Image (cartoon, rainbow, N blue to C red):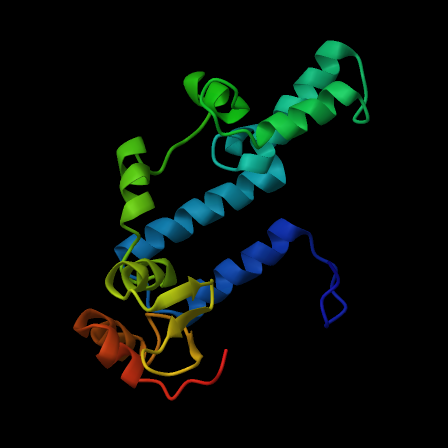
Length: 197
């Protein structure tokens, strides 16, 4: 990647610039610093020893698995069997998933338990847009559509749909948005003038 300065950097070198920026410009608590140490460890591995981060970085695990398969088969990247494996990589069914097979072999480092993942499917973290969308859908029957960036609400008694942009819950105004959401449909919709959908 060529930067505006003219400097050419690799993707890990660019990530290291982000890491350095975070460390020098933000007030980090102990938990934040632990995350930065992990970030640095993975970047070191990407630059010096891919195998050392294969349990942490999905594309590395996939690349190394495919590379081993190529060696075993004595083939090249354009082999149809590798293309089939590429498709199978996206298959999440436990009996078919290549990632699940790597996990069973102890080659996947999990940050969350299967229970945590199952809970997150129905209970996303409360400081995310996913939480706002889910809460809106469950509390407000007038929501007719929800996207990554907005909700569409059928405003009762009016011949129109109102698009409501979703703020970042961690930014200014996010708390008011969530409070109105808790208070119900009328309070929520009254926050917005809205426009025709």
